[in-house]
Length: 478
Ligand code: SF4
Image 1 (tube, rainbow, N blue to C red):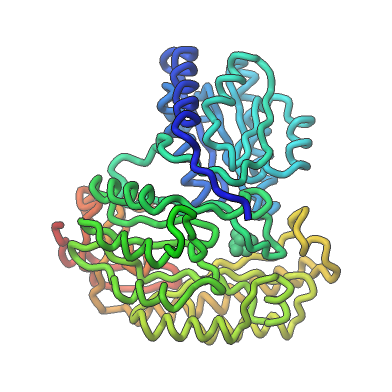
Image 2: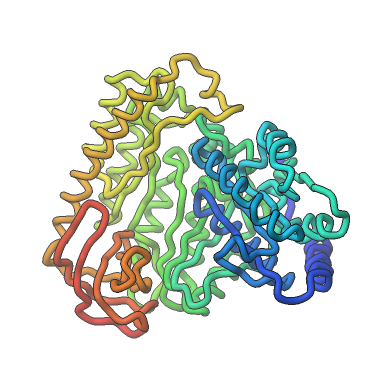
């Protein structure tokens, strides 16, 4: 395995020097617009891009037409997300026609693939630079060079062993939730997945750096923190042999303050009994740092033959015994999962095994996906690709089953009082507020926006498959 390298102070300083130079170069009043696709890891990367852009003197805008710098942070996990990012980038051509000084950069997983780089070089001449996901720390440098050398730059080859600490991060002021990356990359090579090719091999941050960042967020009033990694269970900092994800959680629970720590994503082959014990030991509680009762455990398929073809390294029974242990040791746990339907050669019988597994576990929610061919992955070259119509029909059956189960699980909460963290004004109905329970369920209620960040007790009046509706009984001042 490649060795991880924490970037030296002089390399980080070099990037800060570029930030100062760009700041001098662009003067005042310049605006940046960032469009983000994909997962929370990408959202976290966009917070870093924005942090660096703000340090360089840009202010954020939510209107691409007003921007002097547009960044598209792309995803490569599904073809649909790539095509959408390309089509959006095409729309920015008109912004460039109105403002020839506009700089357009495309970052993220999509541009770490050779065929996409070639495509953008040839068909999107108004894109000024491409920056691969493992080179994000060099954003100030590529921007400086693009501004001064007046030529297009394509920096996409992965520096897979790098971890950049102490770069500026821009988080929403006053937000009660935050994401913290604990590791990057993946070594698993599930046969359907492009991530190891575009994000490189696994590398874990030093625990001291993670603990310092989480401590500072808690001191700044953040009440819910999600630790991010493609497979957090294989967190292994080279600086501390024998120290893993359970030890990191244990150390975070020693911090002062009140916060719920969640994490995603887990790989069932690496989720140990020790991890389950640490979670069991630290429930969220008033005045304490505790661990979320939501456990996301990707199953992907209920068929052992398909799991093997996916290179997942567990069987259904092994997964089920892990689930049993989690349910036994963590009362009230909310299990969620990822499932892919229509993996090459999946038969109707094997798909039914997935439905049976969903019935056995009774997840609170599943993230279900139609298998999508990713160029360069092993599964893309497999024979027996499934007809799109069959995949669509299987997806619908899976969604229908899960909606029923989610609703049945949630209805049990009707007329009960539950505790939740008040997040703020609802993103979908501005006249409502939302709160989230320790196991990740969303509650809609009518309340006062000033209560955001407080914990409250809620009487659940109505439950749907994916949301709860209730009233605030009382807030708990922390
Ligand atoms: S564990 Fe598998 S699915 Fe998850 S990122 Fe790694 S290769 Fe992809």
